Length: 303
Image (tube, rainbow, N blue to C red; front, side, top):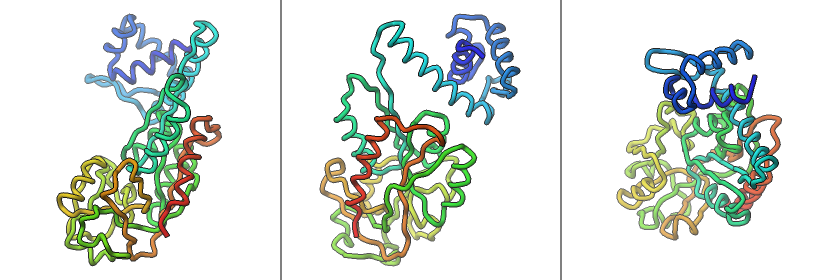
């Protein structure tokens, strides 16, 4: 196995075609195909499904490419620092459910480390994609929640993908709404009282199972339900339609402003928010700092 073969495999993955990858690598298509075949024979797995319409990764290939990217990135860092005598930027990426506090913690971490020596990325995305991102090394850390309903399903995936979940905080369930909502001044509210208002839920794409919902109580038969793709749209629907969503109760006015509030839901349900990482992989200094910033919100969970 050579570094060139790893780069070839990564390029094929990104191009989705042997011909396109060969052109970008400035080598012939037969030479590239031969190099990929030799790599597959050496490691004993098939990396790609070949069809007339191009190539796609096999499940085993996805895992291999994740490791390959890490090896190539580490080599490039070494080459830049010790051979090219350049100071390569260290990278940190995190994937999160649509939590404002997770973004706020990211902001604080970036402010402390600065962007001259570091390259940062944050992905607010779907639940299954968070798991995929950490599995495939796209992100070092994933932020999501588990509860009694989804725990067995998610923990099964974590085990299969060689990941581990660490608890950060436990939260009661709150109803997130704008302050002009008719129920915004209540100390506590029931689902029955919310029936006439639309529940706002984040779309989960092809993995739209109840188990991957970002909102707890996903199996409840809501009278009115609207799905959206991003947090900005959800906030607009709260104001425009008196919509609401279920959340942890952590308020980040510095990012979302002062027009929104959280009212406790009458429920015994508990959600556990935590971070996902790869097993037996040390968390970087950037990752540790990010988790320190998120941990500060534990004291801000509403009673």
